[in-house]
Length: 319
Image 1 (cartoon, rainbow, N blue to C red):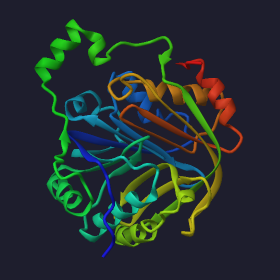
Image 2 (image 1 turned 180 degrees about the vertical axis):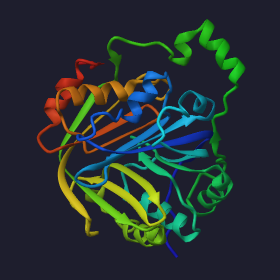
Image 3 (image 1 turned 45 degrees about the vertical axis):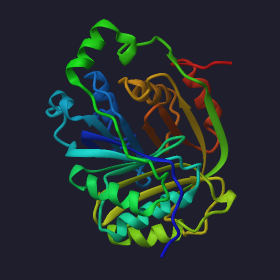
């Protein structure tokens, strides 16, 4: 029996579609990245993961509102659509590997899969089938150490009221576009280690058991993402301050740019403008994740300062 892990809460959002694009990065110039295509259609992603699967292949997977599906369903025949998903987040993680390992162990033990996993500065967010929502909430409530009075926070949106607010008070729903996007600052963390793992869904509980005991302060993470391509292929990426004791498929030195800003989770095109800016400067990107108001971009060692300076063309950075 694994020890309970203390968290403060659960956040739940329903009625999404997960759109995934696999493509050959850098070689197929005719392939428009998913984030660019969605931005051009004015479609916001409430979360997104981008990652290199091996030396040539990459994937992009974004979570969009169900009502936006009609805007993009005919966009690209190569895209994969997973309808009726929800996002479930636990918080805070305090950059500990323990909550991640414990949650992966619980999901694997109960044979519940997920589409994607993204970390922000406070939350671990999982994209799962909406049919599994109640079961996952029960698993978290019964196994994590939560405050006695806690109930999951579910953000529900009244579409009619939202449209009224957009028309009358556009700033309250962040529909505006900025020449330079406001941020609360961009943080660069060098000297990190990016570890890539590949395993089957049947091994999920096993990997969770390996990660969960890592409670040393030096074992903290800086960024996490995961992508379940098929039941036989779960890709997990851990960015840590040092190489952890679990043997990885691939390891490389890396740097992290992280930033957040007003209404980042409510507006389209922000992540697209960031990645387009780096692409124009030929700055390589290893991983990218955004969820809520947070964005994390993982770069090869030595590219962090150049990337931060490049982003000043797009983002307003307070001094």
